Amino acid sequence: MYKSKQLLFILVILNVGYLFGIALFSDKLTAQQLSRSETFEGYPMEDAVIRVAETTGKAVVAITVEQVQRVGGVRRFYFGFPEDSPFGSDDPFRRFFEDFFGEIPQREYRRIGVGSGVIIDPQGYILTNQHVVEGAEKIKVILPDGREFKAELKGQDVRSDLAVIKINARNLPVAVLGDSDKLKIGQWVVAIGNPFGLAMQNPEPTVTIGVISALHRSLGRTLARERDYNDLIQTDAAINPGNSGGPLVNLKGEVIGINVAIYSTSGGYQGIGFAVPINSARRILSRLIEGKKVEYGWLGVTVQDMTEDLATYFGLSEKKGVLIAGVLAGGPAQKAGMKKGDILIEFDNKKVNSVKELLSFMNNSDVGKKVRILVLRDKKEIPLEVVLGSRPEQVASQQITEEQLPEDKEQSGTWRGMEVAEVSSSRAKQFGMSQTEGVVVVKVKEDSPAADAGIMPGDIILEINHQRISSVNDFNRITRFLKGDCLVATARGFVIVKEKSEK
Image (cartoon, rainbow, N blue to C red; front, top):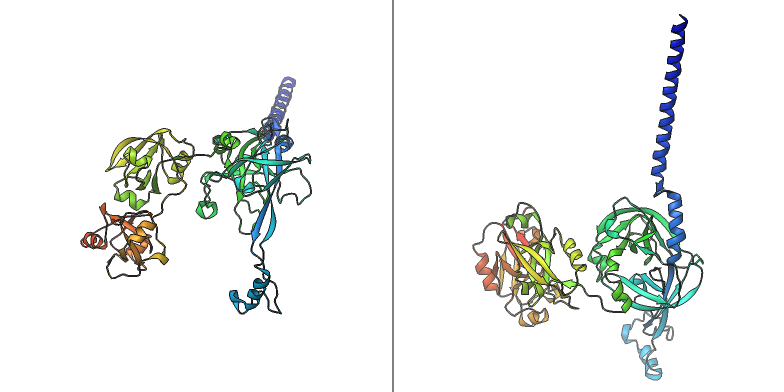
């Protein structure tokens, strides 16, 4: 009996110890998990952000620019007549004063702009946005320690929206440039800059934290204008006016982007900010510092994304590649043998799935580089070698606005809801076309196959089902017996015009 009690006691002790050990191990495991979730490379998250602010933050500067704008003289009040005189621009009192005293002189206004920048070299070179320093007559840089310097614009590139300025200072704190190609969605990032300029009366930059919300974002032509905003980093780290040109930094303190813009309906922060990837800047930094023009590789083609309808027409099992909508005469692509209607599926041994991807590849290719291109033509893969050229300042447009449409429509043709007319020799010369090239759309009927295809007044029809259109007679002859879906080549690109409206 005694031995039985002794054995039972030992078993109870063992069970209690076992349970205590499990609980202790679980607590330790939970603590380790919490520790891992709150740390970054051995630093608690809070300490990591503080470390970034204390290191990279020292290399972030405030930039103020001064621009002089000249505007015409402002009308004064003449004999009780206000500026909006009922006589309009032919105000006799205004002419009376101008006859005696001359025209009202232009007035100068000084406009102050603000932004941020990041020191990338101990010799005083600072990277910022081109739009921050655009048109600046005076540039001033204020360091976090309060010192002020006049800055010189060394180089700028509108397309990338990047610029380099320089101050006459030595032994400056320098930010480390990271690798934006290794970024992942959800990665923690810190935005550093001077929101609202120096309104806070403090030269020290501010930091905001967030994550990378998306990669390879595009702002589109409306927001981008002449800039190439097709490969941006999107973040929810607060980026406010004045932050432009400041760095987007990972938790290692490495610069992985240059803050460029916010998307907002109110003008304030709404959780959507954008930055130019730092690798886009790396390629052109030396040219900016040397003040040289930045050149980008150029094919000499117009391209468009594939649609389901286009893929079906060309007999593809899936959407892939981009469609060559036009080939510029004498350009690199034409010299290499590329043709309108080809489907470009590989560029420099990289798969091409969209126009945005192709533009990104082009932006990272140097002028003069020999590139292997793979195109689909009549369902066959054809390899081509093209030597990239330099994009000209202006490329001739082949688009006519509604105000420039032909008034004389006596010789016209209609087909599937569109009405076309001849392109006059004067208009052909204006838009850089040969006299016999295409017909112009003057009217599109609502809810018609042409309208469904996206054809608009002012479009120039060049081909239908690979048959060239040189006149209205050609248009009428070719369209008379057409059936089924048709491939229409316009100056803007290819569209599929169906036999019947889908509406």
